[in-house]
Length: 459
Image (cartoon, rainbow, N blue to C red; front, side, top):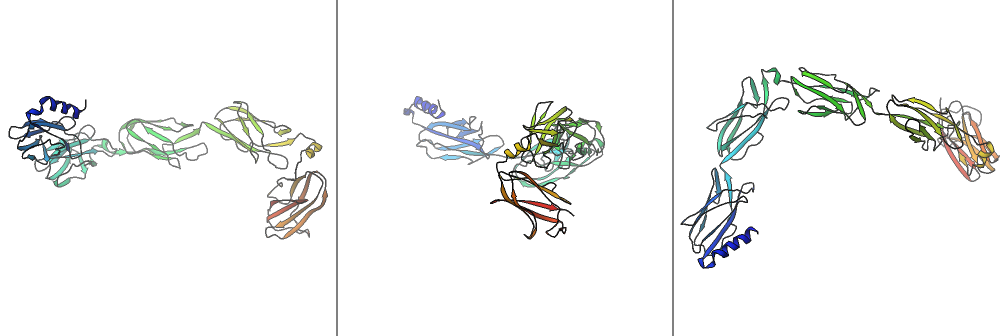
């Protein structure tokens, strides 16, 4: 049953014949919080009511009553101070009040250079506002009558504080975070030190985003992009362990114990080893053309890496494993046929040469269109070879141009049969004079089809 229905039932049970009127409302503080236990006195024999946990009060009063309703609670004033009824001839709903404490709250922390609370500091308030002490966590609080003017000064033997004093003038509001810090102390154990250093991988590169924990009391820190870390300030004499961590990494040493930490510690370095290392390389034919779709199988795990469109493969494996990598693709053999790896670090340029097992006739059979392979070598000096394939007999021309479009040399012009063909350019022009170093363009035409390729002649 709701409060409204319950009150209505009470009202009916008392009876309309008694000529009663009903007064109710809510009392809240300045922040809108319900105020329980506020007493509302009704003058001229009207009795009293007390607010419940919702801050609600109600009163049945004789029809025609004349008087005042005045709320009261220790250490509070109310707005309005009272309500006048002259006379009451009907129910009065929402007769609300707002309570204001006559005290303002002052609170804050006193901490040392490491952020730990300092217990047992006395804060003295002038002009009759008393004194309070900090607790175990360094926190203090006091309640002072609104309108007070004066100062607050922290004191503990052997310490000075910053600020040395806080001044207040006719204060009427709560004062939160009125903090003090230690500016000087004769006790060495309250001074601060820090720990710092670098975390680097096996190539001496800094490892970023490594988290270093300092037990439960001090906040962890993280390495920057150079692998450098520095702890927050730590109270001298701290006993504890610093432990680095990052997913997929192990560290040497695993942690460092300080027992105690009595001075600044720099160069507290760690080596970071990735749990995984990579093996990678290229697979090309004798003309340096990439071979796509080669499966490189690793014996330890059975994992497979595949070459992409430029003949490159890469696989990450657990550090420390022994494995044999074997490339395979239908109609190809490879040199070397396999490689043995001890995965103690990254293994780059683990490349293979691919050789087709098809006969020349078979190779001709698989040419379905005019095909141009990458010149090899390129860049070059003194010469490079261009390889191309014809799907059928056709008229072919091969021209060299400089980057400005000037014709340099015709390497070939005439009919050629279906199949693979090679042409060599030694860097000379039509007059057999060596061309200057730079970028050139090879234009290969077969019938009405044209392909081009950039060539770089070195000095």
